[in-house]
Image 1 (cartoon, rainbow, N blue to C red):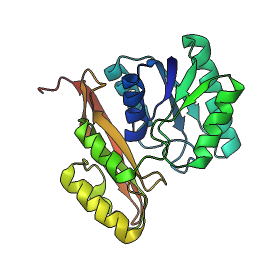
Image 2: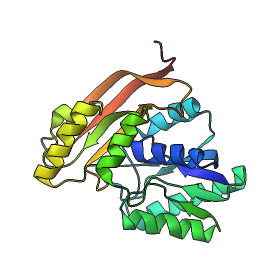
Image 3: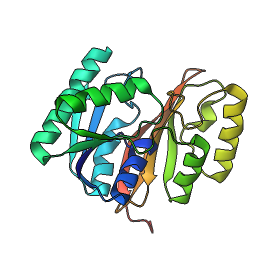
Image 4: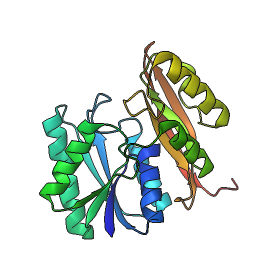
Length: 230
């Protein structure tokens, strides 16, 4: 089936694309929403502009739409515009997204797809979170933490890669502090620097850390696509 993919550059949307392609679907375009602030109800905020690099790495067209509205209605309108544009330009038959457990997001995505007579694919919905995080590493996904907003996650996590050691630490912290290990509740945001979908990896050249004592963002100021041997 010809699919458009809701794509933030984070681990969930990227892995959902990976699973959709493994299932035999064709990803005709990526749909990226660029919210105006980090309190977006529907969309990933940190480093949303990096989706332009990652779309190039994935060799897939990108439909990017600003979503400056702060209400859920305004964000839903922006999403509707983006999906409408993707359907018109790439003749998609469905949408794949990386939702895991957020009924609010799921309902919003399904409502837009229903309006445009599109199928909805959510290959990560209801997944066991610890198993899923291990699968990311087993599938050679290089994932960086670029935003945090949860008790138990301190400044040191900003810009850190998720590997076996850090995943074990995150698992222990999630049990202690009660946050979602897969960050589905907005506890953290991620960026996939490399994975089997990419022809090149994203190299971060310059970044700035923003931290207010409880939450923070790892803002990428300069990046480029490089061959994996660089």
